[in-house]
Image 1 (cartoon, helix red, strand yellow):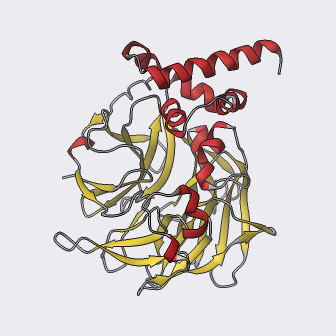
Image 2: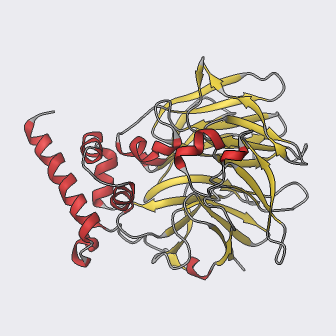
Image 3: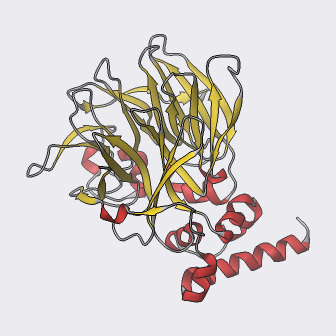
Amino acid sequence: MNSRLLITAATLAVLAAILAVNQDPSLINIHAPPPIPGSRDVLHAAQIVNVTGAVGPESIAFDPSGRGPYVGVGDGRILRWEGDGLGWSEFAFTSENREKCVRPFAPEMEHICGRPLGLRFHKKTGDLYIADAYFGLRVVGPNGGLAAPLVTHVEGHPLLFTNDLDIDEDKDIIYFTDSSTTYHRRHFMTAALSGDRTGRLLKYNILNKEVTVLLKDLAFANGVALSKDRSFLLVAETTRTRVLRLWLNGPNAGNVDVFAELPGCPDNIRMNHKGEFWVALHSKMGVVSNLIVSKPWAGTTLLKLPLSFKQLHYILIGGKAHATAIKLGEDGKVLDVLEDCEGKSLKFISEVEENNGKLWIGSVLVPFIGIYNLQ
């Protein structure tokens, strides 16, 4: 890197640090992400359901009989909502070392306690498949308990950051993502800012237990979703702010194209009953954050500064905590954008699950889920 780029990187980092620390309103306007045309600021009306004694209900799933939602939380458990007045019950867990897992939020213990992220039920068997960031792909039966390992290593190396999954119940195939072969989940900020491009999309055959790497060199591989007709598969590249489409069948089989360019960092993708896709954005992106994630030298320089996780996160999200959910058609076109622009009720959302006329909204960072009535 030449001296001019070094100076530019340092200046950018210092500017971002000032923004993070001072929070001057005039500077925040520059730092903040721009509005999305056609967006509806309605998610502040969502009902909030606290997850008592837990944090980070990242993914949301309903079992084949309609019970739930089920959520995975920061201490390695999967909880089930039993209804108003009953609250949450413990359904499953991904680690045997439960005696050490007593704090709701303890990133330094995630490699011991587990961190369940993506959740999906196999509609025919009732089994719950779990993408645990540290323990890989796991499964637990309809009665819950300790989840059994399915995939912990790929190509001779342990999975470091298993993230999300989807299931083709007809073919007994699980598609799942590994966000990085370099960084664990607790170092996700470093993965995002350093320009890491080691994410993968993988396939697991339930019947013969074979694992296949479908795509490599992805930028923070994240959410996964099959199309309604099973002709293509979507995968989110969080730090490239886009969703890719891998064609599985037909004349384009094996080809990859860009399904959607997004105004922020996509997390999980979930299909509704119409075949449309809800994409949860962890955050929108402003001028500063876009520059940081698009230029690895800028993010790497930022990481060298004496900034806390909170300050780095503030820089990355554009200063203001908020929530953005985008609905895409089967062709990738934007159909709707729902937001809580001021973060009054929801922020840092990780998944939007449409079920019975409602949006069930998770977040990897907060101690509650949101329920937004579409009707």
